[in-house]
Length: 153
Length: 170
Image (cartoon, rainbow over all chains, first blue to last red; front, side, top):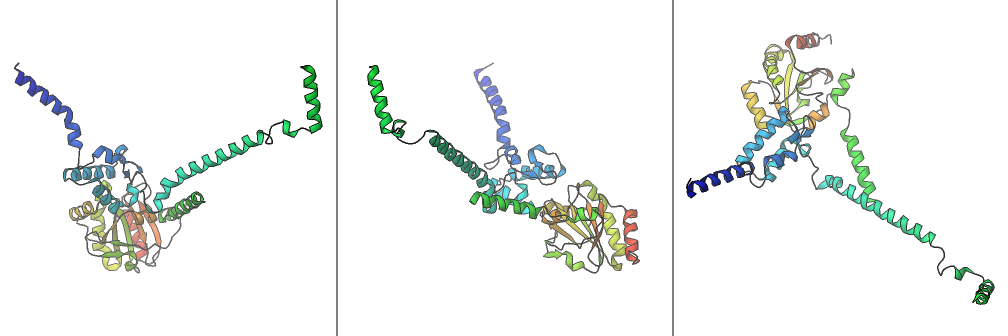
């Protein structure tokens, strides 16, 4: 086999490997990824996990829009205009729905802050009064201890 | 404080969204007043509201182009209009969970000769569609929902509901 023919075979093989990605690549998005971001509003499953007639219809439209060079934003806004925001698998990050993103993180941060504060207060209460044990002794007792200790030396 | 307010807001919102559907009420033997709606005409000329048909018997049919069973019903509803239209029966088709373009193509294919509107989900959520499409509600002349067909409507079952209403015995 000539070198040229070998190169041609290699090119075809490489092309074949690259084909699935190329075929799925749309205008900055691809169908499998877009399907994970959408819901079947009839069966309430994610679009990529559903074979309902509704999901099948949406998937057919995704193929057409991909071929027509639509952007991901245009695809999403068209679907939201047709079916409302329930078509989106994740709530939008604006308006009231922003709370769905902010509240869990804020609740976690608040919980961590409360736990840290309680731990700090608890550790302070165990440490005893400032100045160490000697500061709490009667001066007379302190002098007696010193005298006793001197007797041992 | 912000977190607490947010959680209260989310809770209130979920309560508001979970109001009882017409479907649940009718299944429970009740005859609720039909909630009004105003939706864009599927054929693209303005809006159509349910209140406009007050005084008539309305068959409110929820359907979609991807629903195979809905294809069977279209000729029956055309027949209903031909047979009972002059006696005050109207069919209103609500295309829901569907692309308006697909709904229009479906309407052309099956020659639906009655008012058709397109719903992006809010109306079908308020009314309820049970386990799936099609669902058809029967609304009397006083605007009360008196019956629902959960699935394909057949001529006999529809006649059994419509005749007493037309004779004024129901």
